Image (cartoon, rainbow, N blue to C red):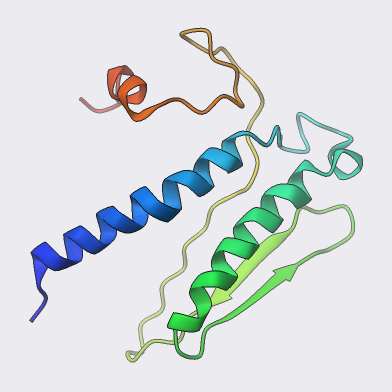
Length: 130
């Protein structure tokens, strides 16, 4: 049976120790969608972002039996990180995310798009659906 308290502690520790610091480094990369940065290949930010998450994922793969990772690259297209983690059932799950932003837009509270905010500051931001 799943030990909920133990699992919650493990997830919270992983977020605090590994995920949040990685996301902070990611936010600092001024990576924009090719629609907002026509010279995205020359700037290299997309490759920097992909490399950051690729390194993070490679560090996790040894604990996932049979897991594989590859970065698919096609000329003129942004990279795609493909991770396959075999499961025990027949069902499939696909998770998708992207490594770029959709431009700078309007920033509140004097932040630039590449400035990570502290958790205290984020807690003050209005949340959708509340």
